[in-house]
Length: 294
Image 1 (cartoon, rainbow, N blue to C red):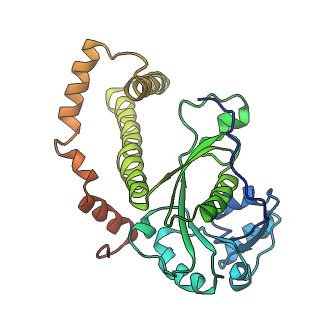
Image 2 (image 1 turned 90 degrees about the horizontal axis):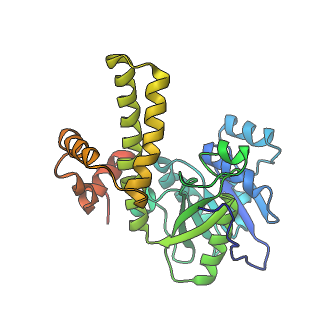
């Protein structure tokens, strides 16, 4: 993957953007990039610690009602479990035609957001820099999360067919997650299957399992940590390159070992996680809900 960043479409008119939750983890990340844009950006934060982080970063904290009153795009950079009450407070204050942008699909899919027919809703989640990204600088090497130096892609959902408003959302998305290679548009439900099902239920779980296996190799088997870590890190890259890109075929002996691993570790019905009721089940747990309302 090249690090040449694709030129993204730009709106010609300047925008007013409000970041609600600007002092939180993701609020700080997106605000760092938006602060460098040519648009007008207001930063809202209620917690004392968050307000201090915002001012320490050289940004002015604005009361939420003032920040969102004339905003073209309002970014709700708050945890999923807080989106229902926060959107209930904020959305009624927005001007007609504003875009409400959230950073994870769970609340939108679970219908937790306060709804108005005269505003638009978008969700955008970063893909994070690819493991196959060709990193050219120390800053790119250090940026494993994205949004600082290493280019990444973004997957987003827009809940209407208003292409002009979607272009506005895309501009803000491209700025706040910069540097961005491309924005992929899907449905809210498809985005929910990407995050959490594909990348948290599966990929992040496997990442944690790899670390557990590494610790067993070190502490139970007794392999020196540098040797075990070197073997694992190199083979993870080979496994991903062969498994996801088909760079080289696995050897016959490796295929036998892989079948043994699948029989020992993976349940036969694991693909049931891609059923709608299973998606609802994991989201209920993540959002602390009794049910997903349709």
